[in-house]
Image (cartoon, rainbow over all chains, first blue to last red):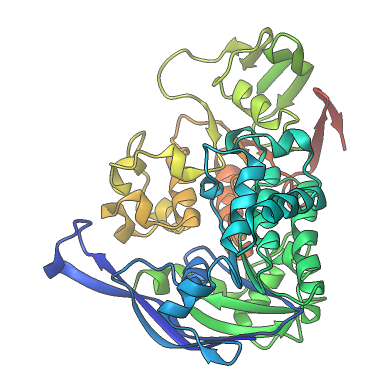
Length: 278
Length: 204
């Protein structure tokens, strides 16, 4: 169980683009954000770009840049999740599937890379090699892909390698940051199905995405995020028809703006940019 | 009228990308193009905008070849705006590189005056995409190739971008080729859609 309790995150920025400390201001990126993630569920965190979704993942993993100011509480399995515990659990109990494919080491072959993830999670090296093999087979990566370097993989394959690394570490909490961006429908289906499967094995899966439509079929709960705040947490089943069972106007607007629904704006969406700049 | 006549293109001699593809885009027409990744959608878009030269066939604009220099009347809008801007230029300079949009046009595309003094990496992907779309709408431009421009946008931002583009295109009779994976989106935007498979176009 992961509990995020009123998490507030501020990052420094500089009014004219130059990093001089006397011109430093603080931008609030997460604003009293709360969320509970239980084992066996896929919890989708959906929001526009710039809503602070990725920063939420970094805050949980303890990967924020040094000058960040963090307030509020994180609890993992009932105990507070502080910096030292984050360092201890990272890559073992908690795994992040990063957004950027540049997270793969360009100088080693796929299987070595996955075996490293297994070793970092505490498996002896012979065992790690075997389990990396199993994980890669499981995600339908053939021998050629297993022997390939990162630049030789397609976007969908690289995503599955990253998912295999999270899988092999036996992490209980998996955070996937925009795993389906830039993939064609078949590849996206595979990557999302892999996440659903992790949840069905009793793991906690947080799916961070802007793609509400494709998150819905695999998600149990959906949290809509906007400007660092939680707008609403709803069951995935609430997103249907005209969105009448959604409580907030913004989530309704988000739902109705989809091309397969009304594809029309409602009043709330217009003032988005103004609030962003302030 | 933008016309592609029997285009063939291959990156290497033994793998044909496009074979004998013909396509016509009228002024004011919205045309959709879908296909699996690697089918050659972007290649076709780049051929139409003159970024690539076909090995056989020709792209013509009102019967004449595309101009060799100057502002191109066919503009290609790429998927990743971060890669389409100079990271050392401020947004104002990027936006006004080709032409100077009016305040009303900036507002229609939701480009805020406060962005102009910022560097592109301080804008979000959706914000930067709107800057790039507006940049491509110089008065000389008559056709747009929108290559997956709203893939990384949330539904609301996506909708706003298309609404602004639709209004602008109607006013100026812009012809737009929309390339996307998203069949629901294409259905909404384009009365006529093509599917690209194995180097061949089929009408859906």
